[in-house]
Amino acid sequence: MTTPDFSFTLAAQHGQARAGTLRTAHGEVPTPTFMAVGTAGTVKAMTADAVRATGAKIVLGNTYHLMLRPTAERVARLGGLHKMMDWPGPILTDSGGFQIMSLAKLRKLEEKGVTFRSHIDGTAYELTPERSTEIQHLLDATITMQLDECTKFPATHREAKESMELSIRWAKRSRDAFVKRPGYGQFGIMQGNVYEDLRRISAEALQENAFEGYAIGGLAVGEGQEMMFSVLDYCTDFLPADKPRYLMGVGTPDDLLGAVARGVDMFDCVMPTRAGRTARAFTSNGIFNMRNARFQDDTRTLDANCACLCCTRHTRAYLHHLFRCEEMLGPMLLTIHNLTYYQNVMQGAREAILNHDYDSYCADVRGQWQRGPDA
Image 1 (cartoon, rainbow, N blue to C red):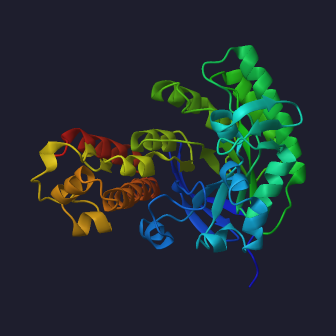
Image 2: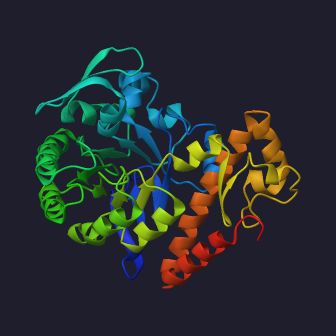
């Protein structure tokens, strides 16, 4: 069977919102899509079957964490990340740049790359654009990300410009190191902080490398939703219409709806899984804290519009009990639900775009959130 080329096709557009299909060596992904975050080769509190049951088509792994444990070379010897984590579908791997900046100890940034000490045991490492790309190749990532520097917020124009220019140079080196194979792709990452002129320069420079897709980095780092949306208003215009657009590290369901409206196709975020472990449920009626005493005698399903294992088999009172007793089943069930809810929001968005009714869909979803848990 011939491996398909890596490609992206649009099926419909409503305003700036897009519905498309990403075709890869490991299967197709309908967009817009939310990628479940499997940082260290697992989506926390989830089996691979449970992740599949949410409707997820693509997951995310991370270069930084996997290079430390169990190492990229060991993953390759074990047959690659797809085999190791029982996920034959597409996998996108983050380059490790953000984690180095946020987690690593005693990091030093230079033109060559970044040297740092592991947050686990203090061991010294060096990560260059070439090494990051090699690690992702060893992992057998379907989509490889360039190594970049995620600019802090706030940053002056000069600071953002210097950082963005470094990321542009690293993009070229990442692209040169990428081993092209049928059905595999590499994404460049647009930087530039909140400065429109820098975002334009970054996008234009990245396109000289003819990446298979483009990510928007450096957002959701403290600037707030209003500013994030104002940056997205022009960012997507700078990117080619025939390539997938990926907004990194975002976000809440409302963030996703707003970003889709501005032309974004792909998302990832730890929020639904992290929230699931801390008793926060994303539902059709807003966000619930399942530790709240109001749920201790509530025999209703968590979300009447959800068909996940959590919602079809258990009550709000039971979930409340599990979290109050610190039983591990509580985080497991709520993670299943939260990821399912995110997938449902994205599936609903896709259907609305195909029906040229995206604005009404967003209004309906947001209106339902306002009704609260007793609706």
